[in-house]
Amino acid sequence: MAIDLSNPVNSSKLLAVVDMGTNSFKMLVVRAEPNGKFLAVDRIKEPVVLGSGMLADDATISPDAQHRAIVALRKFDQVLQSQRIHYTKIVATSAVREAANRLEFLSRIREEVGFEVDVLSGEEEARLVYLGVLQFLPVYDATVLTVDIGGGSTEFVIGKQGKVLFATSLKLGHVTLTEAFVKDGKLVDMRNHIRSVLQESGLIEKVREIGFEIAVGSSGTVRSIENAIFRGYGRGLTNNIAPLAEFGRDWRFSREELGVVAESLCCLDTGGIDAARRAGFFKRRSEFITAGAVLLSEIFETLDIDEMRVSGSALGEGIVSEILATSCDDYDINVNSRWRSVVHLSTRFNSPKKMKSAVYCASIAREFFEGVRKCDVLTNHENKCAFFLDEKDLEYLEAACLLHSIGIFIGKKRYHKQSYHIIKNSNHLHGYSAEEVELIALLARYHRKKFPSYDQPSLQHFENDINQKFRLLCAIIRISVAIQQCQWMTFEGLELSPSDKGFKVVLKQVTDQPLLTDSRHQTVKDIEDELRPELENFKEVFQQKLLFVAPST
Image 1: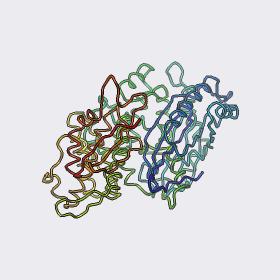
Image 2: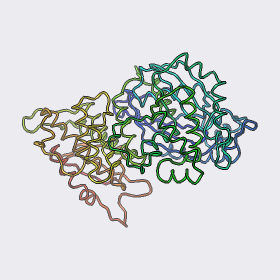
Image 3: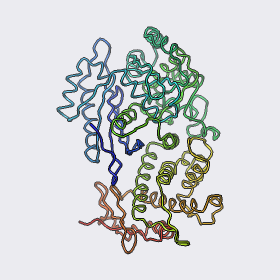
Image 4: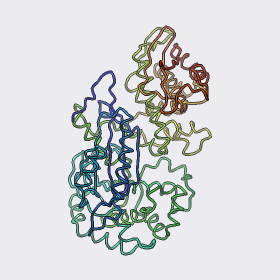
């Protein structure tokens, strides 16, 4: 299905991918642009554990697992129906691929939910994972070995410049390994089994033949291990107080660091692992994390991996990339490396909840940006010379929205200043000039507290036109953050329109929570009073009032 992303009036399109994994079902919703840039606007995960009980001699999906799957897919369908999704792709991986009752299960999904499911081969899954990695890490020109540990299988792929040189899938997954080899909280012969499968697969010889420059892990298991290492697990550190010097550290870990985590997990009983999860080192996959860590440590040893980089993107993002490649003219998988580094940094320091809020803020800011630009009112009132915001300015604005709250990782007090220092000094933003990084960092710094004046010392090194644009962008990010924090408002499809009194913004209502309620007695005036400081800043910069209008009934 070709997707038209060229509509000049509303170029953004929402695409959705559902990944029916062995352990979890995941849905990714992204906003895609005609230039191939996309941003995840929602992620939903359901712990279905579809592969539970699927042993080699009876590889069937149980009735209970099928019921959990149907319930999860119906939840996803409800979300899809509530949003303006332009295109949806549903895929299944190892558990469905290996199930003897696969056709029966897929038929049930079709009849009860209405979804057509594409069952990926192991090799195709590996290829799409590699494409996903390229959406997160700047490794396009390197020969990359990607390892993706799932619940029922592990995919290995070697690629370079977007082309797959080798791909395979082995029946080694953290769910199936746990069920087969963890007895009473103890590992029984798991390492020997893993080594045997790796040695007999021909993987070792093929990897040695082709070689690789960089090893990348892309699964939730790998990200959980890296997160634990980053937060100090195994080093006696308390969660959330990784040394400040490590804030510049990219997502990666060494063989030695992995060994410490794997060894620590193997020494714990179920209660100890649950305690580590409660402390924030691991999340819901805690019951399977030991098997995942042991499997990864054996892969490191067998394939002689010294260090692994970690991708926040995998199968879902790879499928989105594939969709865009067939739908956008002249799509280049290696474009937008700058934007990917922004998403990388935001994902690094924002919790999933904060990330979702930041994405919502960026969406609001984009609507304001495009609205004021369309209205053609940006004028330097001193010399009557028109200033126009361009696509790069929108990129800076959206980047600052995604990064404005990352300083909360350190602490809530003066977090806007911490956000500035992380952006400025972490060396995570690739492809941006020093001036561009400074501009993004300052936008994040001034999204709250005192509005910067024209003679602000931190702005004096900018050219006058950049200084002018900064204040315009600063006004937009501040009003966007303020609106995003008003949980009783929503701005889906926001349109700014000019009037003789200024910009007009029509308010809509939040699902199941009307904007104007008898209990809260909130009126347009109440809203304007709450946002008064930012409305004044907006008026000062744009020389136009921002007027809120209640929805017509």
